[in-house]
Length: 391
Image (tube, rainbow, N blue to C red; front, side):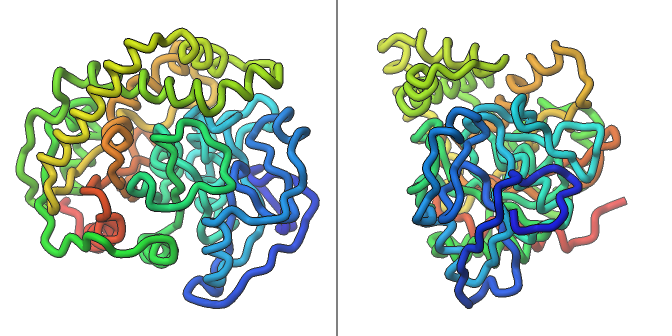
């Protein structure tokens, strides 16, 4: 860590090692990097003591890190992550829980917890995270900052610890939309600018959150006059979520479970069950789920075309309290994933922006667009954020 203070406990306390940067459009911005990316001069701990002990000091930056450095961003440290990036709460049994600056009594969200908190707390201007099942989108919403899950495969994941390859993406956090756009323009080209988007209100998604959160969605998106959309979830939200769980579990069995078993690492609650569930999947189950995923992707492409934009809740409820009962911990992820799985299954970009507070905690809203519309989505989200909100 190159900072002198970390009041939110969001950076890993590694011995400081300077990281060179260039000059360009990101000059003047500071950068935090989730500790599953390789950064020259640092180990890659992945939120796991055994992975940290096994890691050599890296000599090459991950390509996404290098691109931001070359553009002028100044590295200030590696940020906390849930263990092996396999959770969405931001609570690491080994290295602690970063403090959510916007709601200190609530979870910060994970697995990119440290990156979201660092930006929300003003300790860096931009921060790299990764999003597999929601690990940029959920903490962005929980901490009241901007974030993006990009179109799958558009940003290199070289030098990044994998979790589930057909879902893993490299995302960015920023405190405002202009800074998010500035950073993402370095990493992406503008393939589908979305000059005139066709806004859609996915009724099934809007029916999942509670009344107070739905009212926030209605106020925020009212200026866009979206057309109602039915039939987003073929077979229902539960069926689509099961497809996500099976296909992601199959990826994880290939990409991260071998390390878990070979290392003999002790498994904390949560990862133990997810690893066991991944190993228990049968080949017929996986094949069926992959066929269903392909059908869902085609379904989404048909709904969105090249101009459709879903106006969507991020999660079903605001972040829960750190001292919530175990039943809340067990249930929240499954409820949230019925919303978060949509973009992941179809490989679509999703931009999260702050919208206000619900039950005393930040609540984000989001735009989901066609593949390649990443920068266009950010521009339209900025325009939305700058419009007056109806009383």
